[in-house]
Length: 331
Image 1 (cartoon, rainbow, N blue to C red):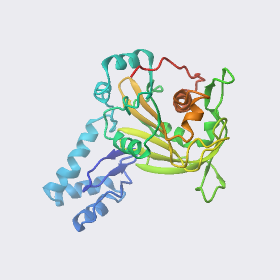
Image 2 (cartoon, helix red, strand yellow; image 1 turned 180 degrees about the horizontal axis):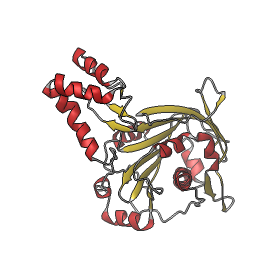
Image 3 (cartoon, helix red, strand yellow; image 1 turned 45 degrees about the vertical axis):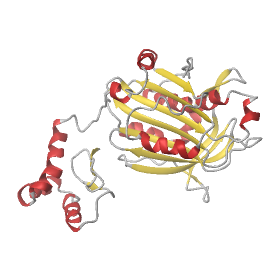
Image 4 (tube, rainbow, N blue to C red; image 1 turned 90 degrees about the vertical axis):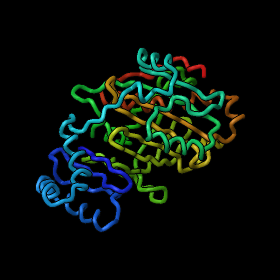
């Protein structure tokens, strides 16, 4: 599937692999001229309408729609690989080199300076706003490089659908400090309609990547216990993000977090070196002082986020890689 991205006043177009069945997304403006344009390019006979635009349309319409499409044909099927150096231009050079050599860097925000590993990309703006709204007292983040599967060099449908197979999250493992071993993180995970209608649903797999979608999940975690979560999926043609938020109070024995006070976000970019993954877990914890005396809360939440990243990598490659924790950065 291929996207032609517009602006707030122009359509966002989605083309299937046959360059037909064009869908004009909801960001299309409501002006009469634009609506006529939307109807024209929304029909199945895409190339006929393209020629109509060329011969009947205004120069502005053709430049608006035609030139981006011609540029698309000149590119490898619209794949948008980004430059790793540009994405990480705001991160210390030694951290970038560590990432390239080891494949992983991690950071605990013990000094409360905020997000320091976030890539330089517009898709991070919503995460930054979420961080400000949440006012977390715990933040852990990491960067990862995951090799592409054979024959893949961009964000594809298989990767997207891996993240939607939520029942498979029971395969996620993490390093348990208590048991001194790698153990399953979840006892049970499944999709539900919403918090009011909690009937178990089958995983929902899609045929093309939407720009935005969301699902609700029930998750029974080995430490945090049972809870309900919302996962939002956002795809902009350059990055794929899935953002998990608790929509119920987390209270295994004592309250850990009120609802909407835990955010676990994973953002994936296609770069020449493979998939660049940014992981972020932020929590406005209840009973922070008491819980901190029993465990390193930064490490505990980092391990949960990193376990999800490793699960995605294993699902992509059919491997059984175990989580490996390096030394945290000192800033």
